[in-house]
Image (tube, rainbow, N blue to C red; front, side, top):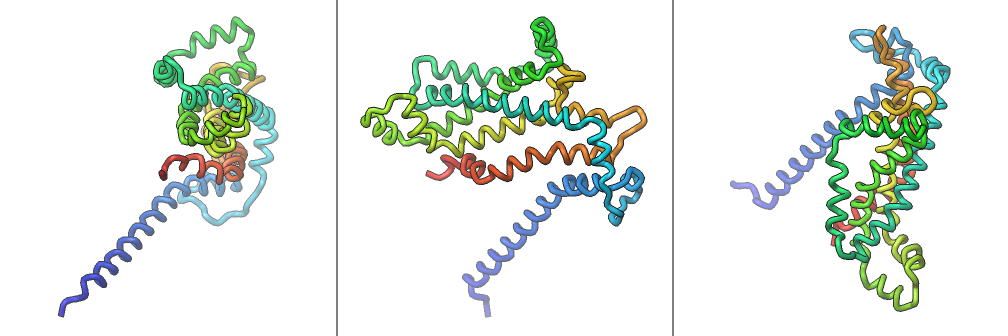
Length: 281
């Protein structure tokens, strides 16, 4: 007697879903494992961090965090926070009007402008570091946080414009036309009509700019030294000729990651809504 086809298909479907769920958990564990291992190592002594095989059971300690703070972590953290927040604000101030103009009020040459923005991301930054170094030296911005603010703004602006333009394109034209019929001028139309609709997309763009600015290393390590070093530059200091200080490096990396993780956790709803804008028509 043969099995009922619908029942067989149902069993195969449940088996497939179970296999997919298991695979998803395996992939998730593989992605999260390095972060978990970093957290565990940050609470170890250096001797425990070097054991082979790795020691899973140990006495937790906060000594590594104290040593990281004693090495002057807070000034680097302040520099990164200042540069990241200010450059992101400048990106939004410049990018929102540009994205609005290139999406909802296009003019002649819009495609050329978009192509130009995209072309700026094609040049390897290593090819531009020498001219940038000379310019920063001539205008007395070498080892200055304002040099990083300008560079991070220029680095993130093209990507932000492209992202926000896609969000602005999702705004119904009827909403804009209704605002214009009510006599709303451009600033009022942008602030009270358009921005509330695309706020999740702008939040997602801002978060991506924050991540890129916070983790950027190449500009910071070449254009700063003592006064304007950022968190990634500070982390490199744990790589010495004597070897790696695994526990201290893990503690420093955990402290460096926490601000971005906290910001991402707070803005996760906006991030999900922003990245999914336009996905479902």
